[in-house]
Amino acid sequence: MSRLTRDESEQASWPHAELSLPKGDPLLSLAVLTCMDARLDLSGRLGISVGDAHILRNAGGRVTSDVIRSLHISVKLMNVREIGIVHHTNCGLGGTDNDTLAQRTGIDSIDFLPFRSFDESLSSDVSAILRAGILPAGGVVWGAVYSLGTERVRVVHGPVAVPDASERLSRG
Image 1 (cartoon, rainbow, N blue to C red):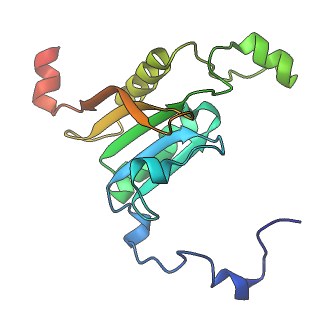
Image 2 (tube, one colour):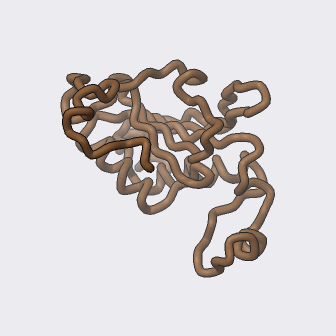
């Protein structure tokens, strides 16, 4: 049986159901992409509460087309100006490859987006956000690693500020 019910009378008692934030705008103008791993306590480690940030989760916390779609909504319609990407130690996608994951899952038709190092994956994901043109000038993107052993978050890439148009033109 599901932990959630369809009984509308119980939905009124759902925690934080009555937060009065406009359209779901995060109070910190922050979106965080991270892994779906249930061991991650991002709220505690980043010092954020319900309503402070948009939290996007997927396998590995990797930038995908659906993450790009969601971040465009966050930035264009909900006032997000900072994007953080948080990968973590002991991730099932770290230190492996698509062939191994295809054997383990029985699925060989998709890219699981595995990675060899945090430097590689975070650099790639931060670059993907910048290339997608999601953030306006002055927006910030960064990449960090959450250590499951120490429960500390360490920034390893960035923060990178999006330049304004004149800076982009002068860089060529």
